[in-house]
Length: 319
Image (cartoon, rainbow, N blue to C red; front, side, top):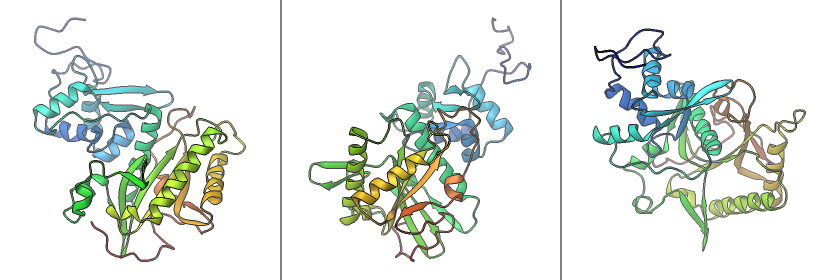
């Protein structure tokens, strides 16, 4: 259908049959798009998570959907069965943000597969959204930590601060970048590992997990996490095992068994299970379960992040 002579564009399915003027993004739109910038916020986000983080209401969501339409495609929108669509910052959106001075350069796209990167982004979004539910809980994302003047100069000087080298020649990089929670006088930093349970935990897959746990143990033994935090924990998130409907937490128990065999009783690695957004054959809505439900530990009692209970009072952090 050709455009009318008055300059308006044909009505999209988001405008409920009304003709609208050509989409002209403004400052409010740019602020929402920045949440999808990998070096500032997230790489992929379902629309309901994006709305919760950016604070966009009905009108903001409509403009977001208009940004996904032709001919500009500022945002890329991927439909998911039974679930909210997933948003990604498109090339035209990156170019527009650079032109407006919101970005200095094109973002570095992660090499992780889409499903893995989406799951990790959802885990981080659950933490950030969930912390808002608790007035006495303060959440500090990695982007704020990296800008803090109290961050050690040695950390700033590193080419990749998130790449640890627990032993010479061996590097370890967590799936999720760090964040900090503070409740009262208790302040703890967190790192995250995300496991999608795409293959059974035996053979090469088990060896890979064992090496990952050995690297984490070496990092904590040498206290390399102190480049960011005085005290830190690791969150190990896995997904529901849909191949075993009668035992959905099978993978979590396998991972805990690996930690038990490699480290033994461990108080700094926590475990939790969530639904896989890409493979779940039912509706998976915006949730904050990672912040609400208790986490498990090997040989130690679990605790909920929203209370930071059963955790000793730490020394002041860098942020």
